[in-house]
Length: 252
Image (cartoon, rainbow, N blue to C red; front, side, top):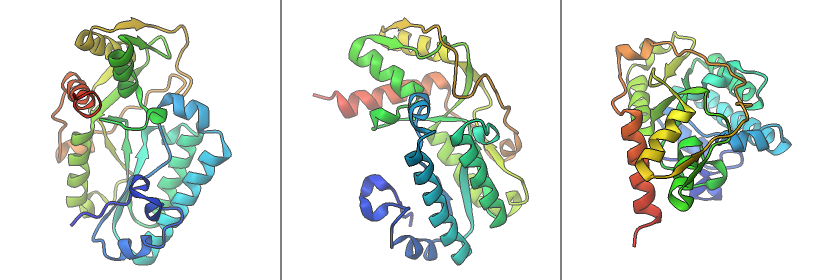
């Protein structure tokens, strides 16, 4: 049985304060530590340097890692390809999480740009942001020129990769980390063009360049490809998110 701990389910699932965390970890055969206070580039630019953002994530890591240590439950920690970008508070926090994970003999998995249907407008990542703008206003307002490239992975592919990592945990545990990515690079402008073609929306480019990753582009290691391969193309994934938005938010 899969037990989900998520703040959206109620305050009793707040990993920073929950009295139920230890019981849940003690009953688990394996833990996926995915929770983090994070959002898209707009959210990070606005909040990652704030006390609240730093405190939320340090408290969350402190409580969860302490529980994992106490119960010695095998786990993976969801890190980020930004963990090497310590000029970013978010990246630095993920870097700290990787050190915690290593000390407990867990396994860090670094995500690139995992996307899917999102429900919190304040935290929309780029694909959700562009799609909602295209649907509501027939306009895609880009925050940058769009020349920066990202490695996008559809959420279902990511979930399947995590299950493979769990099934092969003992074999992979000796790795410093595992990269989970699509291994294909797509520019933000290409994302906008795909969504524009799908929705008929107009694209408005910005003159600004990316401030979050500052032009850095880390290449993922392909160790995971021995066990798993992504199945869903970026075009198909965007179409799926588009249809889910329409059916969930715009159905008659």
